[in-house]
Image (cartoon, rainbow, N blue to C red):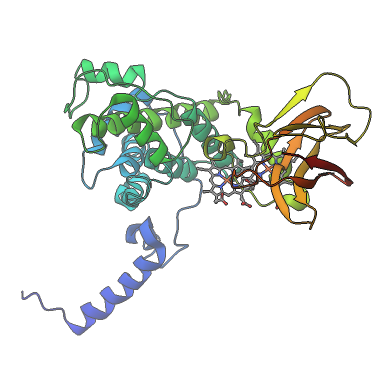
Length: 373
Ligand code: HEC
Ligand code: HEC
């Protein structure tokens, strides 16, 4: 027969196509299973999980990285799906792993979330309840930030040519990036290894990492299924410290569990201020010493509770000359600040009268100082 469709065939296929679009990956076979009538479209979530072998997934993940379309996100997702297709079968046979291709290189090469985490996270989400998804994906992210990649295991597999695709068979340099971001993970590795991002070694580093991350996702899924899940990741206290202000109450503007200081440093630490001995009796700002002075002088202040402190120098006209402390968090104690007679641009200011002014919570005070050259 010709390739032309009859009008009836056309109408039937169009209707099936429209239904197929509506159900996404679940497929037409699921739709028309009972009595040929359209049933509830999408297979009930979560999909049925059965324990699978993490070492098999580690190898599949590495090899899928080089598959079609390939990449870290597809590779991680496909390795878990392939193992579940083999073990459980339907409905895992109905879902194309290619849907995760977008995540390669931290999403189309943008270097955001590591694709291996993204792909593994999607697989976790497919087979876990809402609460377990957050727990397991959180663990996967945290573990990733504190793990050296490629792991010893995947380096060993490469040396023993245990993979199907064996492009690089030496042990590769390892790095722990402290971040779930593709950009930081890859760039730090290139710095550590002194190799470029386009090198065969870097590609195989990410292929091994893909297997490593998918294998760990499977390990924790297995543990959850057995009821023996216990997380390895303990968040550094620095994150909670920053979030105590920036993700809490009226100041809450930050949504992140990433290590804040990796990008921000601690913007509240000021090098020109040091802590001194003793317990703070109350809020104080004491007269500068020496005074008159040239060119530097010391200004002491105390806070009896944890406060955000600003200490600024003004001229007699009330114009800001310099911020010595800018919205910095200080624990209870006594502090010594130095002013070197320069303005915010680092230039020496003229002789004259200046004021040092502190705000610490609701406390405010100013002292008058004389610079005499
Ligand atoms: C005791 C509360 C407190 C803590 C703890 C705290 N901050 Fe802040 N932070 C502030 C306040 C208040 C501001 C000023 C907000 C404003 O000006 O709108 C600020 C400002 C900032 C800013 C904005 C701009 C800047 O550079 O001044 C950044 C970034 C920041 N904090 C990051 C951090 C990080 C990272 C940590 C942990 C290492 C941290 N903060 C801990 C209260 C805190
Ligand atoms: C991957 C890098 C990165 C990490 C990790 C990160 N930040 Fe940021 N953050 C930025 C960038 C970039 C901006 C936007 C530029 C800016 O304002 O400094 C920003 C903005 C902010 C701001 C607003 C700054 C302002 O001037 O008002 C605050 C506050 C802040 N981050 C706090 C945090 C805290 C707290 C954490 C940890 C929970 C954190 N950040 C983790 C990169 C990061």
